[in-house]
Image 1 (cartoon, rainbow, N blue to C red):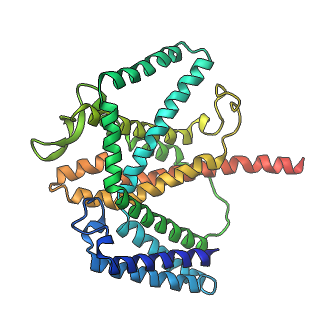
Image 2 (tube, helix red, strand yellow):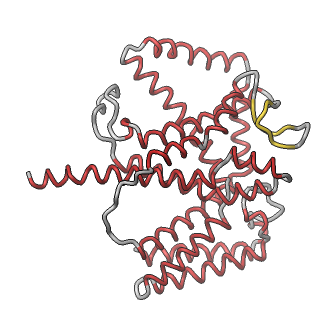
Image 3 (cartoon, helix red, strand yellow):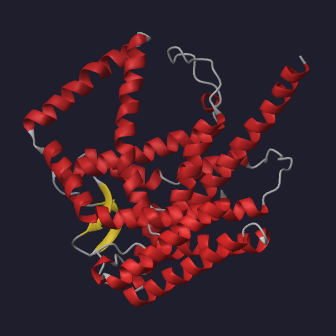
Amino acid sequence: MRRLTASAISAATLAVAALWWFVPGSYPYGAAAKVTVGVNHWIERGPGVGLMAAAGVLGVLVALGVRSWPRAAGAVAGVLSAFFLLVMSDASVLSSIGYALIPAALLGIAGLVAVGCVRRRPVAYVLAVLLPAGLVASLTMTDAVARYLVNVASGFGEFGGRIAWSWAMAIAAVGWAWLAYGSFARERKVAVPGWGRAVTIAAALCPVPYGVTRLTWATPWPLGGFDPRTGHITLIAVEAGDAATRLQGFLIGLSAVLALVLTLGLISRWGETVPRWVPRLGGRPVPVMLAVGPGVFGAVALSVSAPGVLAGAVQMGSWPDGVLFVVMFPCPIWGPLLGAAVFAYWARRRTAEKPRSAAVAVA
């Protein structure tokens, strides 16, 4: 399986290098690219083709040596993972995830209201009336929703291909990381870390600055954004644009709130046992991988976006703007913190389930 994976990634890498060489217009990076939040913004087509070809050749060597020289192959796989992670990937991965989380956040709100109505909570009844009424009012009194959908569709239409390239590079980074891990990993006893709660809270706080500023876009006093008067980003009140732009900012802010809530679930009781007020599932244990899977995915996505955020900060033009950019998008620390939080959750659940499994075996 590992040889097949290495061969597939290597073949794809060499194919991409050939495509970029024979079809110059297919190269998505460099100074001419509209997306600048990545190290790849500074890599022009010639060096880019050379780097990808070299990565493909190294990948072939990994595929050939993964069985005979597993440690050496694992080391090379680690280098390739770092290359795709730090050089070829960028922060557009994170932005696409943020927009993808908007429907999840809205469905979550609708689900909580529905469950509250089933449980006969008065607040839920009020929300069940106000939320649809507000939606109908927005659809009938303004075209903000329609223009928001047009903005999102046009954005993905313009940058969709570029985002697809970023995802391909991120997937390659994950594939090589998995191969490197498989070459060095050994089964061993895992102790529950004592720092799990602290790092989880720290990870949960990372999206707060962005989430708070974007949620204010639903009020008359929006915070954060690009100040056209100075040409710099700012955390203070700015002109957030028309109603469609404000709606877009508010909804992406909901994604940050969802990230905060889900992260806190790693140290909450409801992250281990489904709350009893949830119909039919209440009281049952939460499957470990149901939390670990998305958590690892999020940590990897944030880590992949970290070099792009740093590159974007450098291009801000001044160190205050760069610092504010990293405060709004703290991927360089958010990714590692979330990864550590997920590991602590997994270790705690694994340790708790082993005695239970042993007791069942004895019985």
